[in-house]
View 1 (spheres, rainbow, N blue to C red):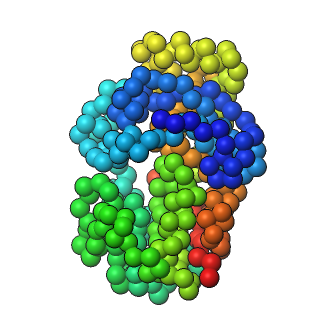
View 2 (cartoon, helix red, strand yellow; view 1 turned 90 degrees about the vertical axis):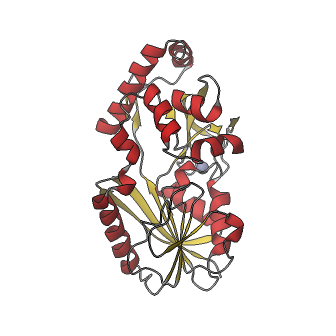
Length: 303
Ligand SMILES: [Zn+2]
């Protein structure tokens, strides 16, 4: 894992910083190393919260090649006993959640007059189940995992096979928060869009929890001590996770944890990421759904 100290969206090196830990599950499964300290930073200029630790290519490959497969679940459940089989199956395959997400996306696109699309690509879109019915006559999903595509969707596993300048609409759902370099990813997608009006829909979770854990040297020493005491670490991890999910806070004696989301966007940072990738932002909205609170953004490729 490499370390950054400048914002991956705007390049600013100033802002707030909280001592953090790499999740024990991530350390074992993806990094194949012991638990290490890192920081959660908040950019002074664009507001992005980001973890200082960034994955190397081989680490990313280990994490995502069989995402939520058997070994992933077994190791994660060992370190996070509260992580259940049902959760591992994920809301991504719950018919109610899929229907709600697709209805939301259809309404968003209709409201912003993105309708008569032919070639549609869901980048990182699992089986293509999040391409709403009626959107696109030629429907594609780019996916590196082994997920099989649903009926009517063509799967592409090699990014080199994506045709530049050919897509009317690209969907980027819940991917950007995982990206080592979010601006570079958006730049790559911009080149795939049709130059005369191709649209990009980006959706990320809106994770702006309050952080009440310590900020200074004492907290660093506490986390170093905690990482040597497995049972207490699990208790502190459970306390942090449950308070964050239920109350929106990281409590005292808890800690921010580098897990799979390494970029935590707000509206300003998401807009700036698209702008720096050469896109024109047309709309940005917030929504609270069954699967959580999200930010949605619509951008067009500059002509
Ligand atoms: Zn920034």
